[in-house]
Length: 141
Image (cartoon, rainbow, N blue to C red; front, side):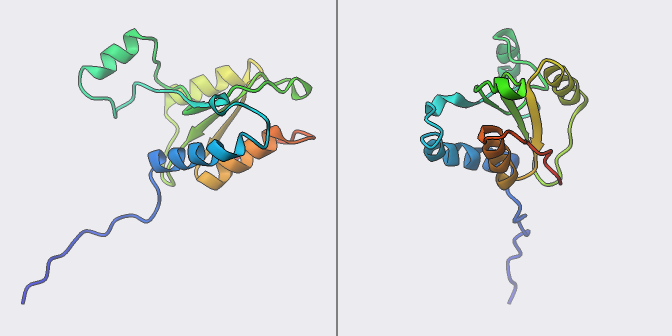
């Protein structure tokens, strides 16, 4: 008897799934920091995932390639940071040239910018950014 073979799915979460999990965590965690839930928000980008025609509309509205996925709009003047940007990546994700340029630009203008390859890293970065004293590690792969 023939059996159906289903291709094995990766057990690693996608970038989308990881980003959703960070936002879900924030839905509860923001209260600990006495911040509004909207202080952490997603930044749409006009990447390859945009449907035909939609990318043009998004670009006309000001969406730019290379922008990080999330922003925590909380300044930390004691660390000379205006806010935190997080670029979420899947385990095998790579930083594009546009993303690198944006990250260098933002870092040079007193924003904390981190790339995270997991939900746990992103949460660790946010917690470190919000802690006293402020010590935000680089996320390791």
